[in-house]
Image (cartoon, rainbow, N blue to C red; front, side):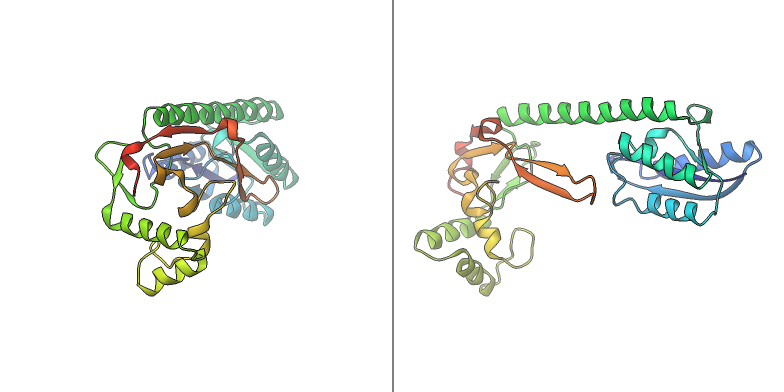
Length: 268
């Protein structure tokens, strides 16, 4: 039987060779059974919550359609996906092309019962992990630390989640607010900064949206409350479109936002 292996790791904090290590174990185990190893597919630092964006996974699906192998071997079913719907669709896809799926952890070919049980457990794992992560971030914010990215005009300190004012960039922020207060539009402010060769927060050119931002999301230089000494966390949530795989950002209700006074960051 011709078989391929699929390995995935979900975090860049893991061993960068962990996905390749999975393939090594898969190849060794399959060949011990007398099967013929065809190829290994890997996706590094890719979440199991979606199949979108996984090049290795996509290549494996294409080769399955082209009849290049008879079996997919994985370390565990959750390496394929932690999303119950995606996992069920993948198994159905493989069955259509008469391809089986073998799990090393189970030591057997997977069944519909495995898909239902493991998929449900994996989905619950992702939900629990998300809740624990958000609970930890909320606690950090209430303790005066940051729960997200670094706002423009500040720099990190040796203490995780603690910022301090970066005076050079703070001058740019003050200039933006002065110009806005004098009636200049975000587009005019961006043009002035670009004319003076001042790098934007991402290192490129400034544009009006960087200045003006989004009212409901509370982003953009002139809408960020951090500059008046208030850190706002939990302003938005990310939702993935199940059809396109694209991430959509939606504002959270006002009552779910967490606001903490940070007077030492005022006046950037």
